[in-house]
Image (cartoon, rainbow, N blue to C red; front, side, top):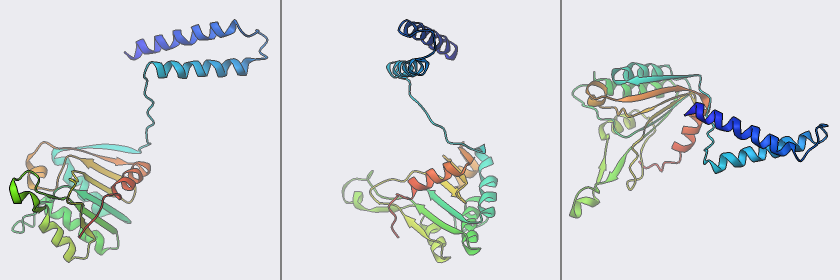
Length: 221
């Protein structure tokens, strides 16, 4: 498909250039106007062909984190954070009887970062129980309650989102440089049993872009 597109684009350019040559002399006096018209015709052709323009953000490195690869990379990134951590997590399900679990350790990493002076902010999901019937639909389900209470007791700024909107994100922004995003919740199943796919991106522009959008989430205690 790419080769066909290049051939069509090349043929289109040659045809347009030959057609415009008929209206300009060969002396070069109108070469700037000629090139400008060719450019306009090329842009018009792309629009007519419904070509969408995409502008990528630069990244220094992109690392896939599949299944068990997630925990060690995230643990290391949180432990190495020096300035800031923004954590937006749909579900952090901790078992108080098993504080040695990986999911528990990641929450402890947030607490330790806060204690060493890193600016930490955590947002968990809460929502009305819209899947229930009758009066139960008005009840609020606060996910990650144990993790929320643990962070709060240790002075970490932790919030719930708007109860009328589901925040399904699983995102970490670290030092406005590292973005970790994907399907992985902080649960035993996600970290030990499920097939999960996330990615670690090293890019200041990408981190700032995500942070700017995530900071618009309404926060409640």
